[in-house]
Length: 170
Image: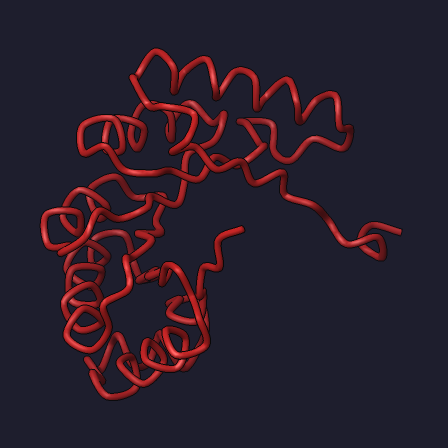
C-alpha cells in the first residue's frame, strides 16, 4: 500500500491562500508534517485558475522539494500545468490522474508515457462515476487498454475505484 499525503491541495482554503500569497513557510510545514508521518508521495495540487495553474504548480514543486526528499504526486486535470511541473521534479513523480474521460486520455496520458511515471487511473468516464461495479470495471478495462497502448507497465498503474461512502446518496 502506498500512502499519499494530500494536504497540499489548492481547493483547501488555507492552501489556496498560501499559494496566492506565495506563503512558502505554510506549504513547507504541510510538506514536512506529511513526510514525517510516513507519506510515500506528497500530492501537490495548485487548484487555482487554469491560466495561473502552471506557474502555481511549478512553485509548489520547488517549495516542497526544498524541505523534503519524498517523491511528488502531480495532481491536476490541466495538462499544461502537469507538463510545466514535471520538468522541475527531482525524483520521478506520480501523475494524478487519468481516467476514461477523453480529455484526460488525450491530454494527460502522454505525460506518464513519455516520462515513465507511475499514474493513478480513476474509474470514471465522460458520463461521470458509474453506480455499478460492472460499469466501473468496464471503464478500468478501457483505461488499461489505453495505458497498454501507451507503453505504461501495469506495475506503474494505480487504480482508484472511487469508492463512495455508504451514507452517500441515500
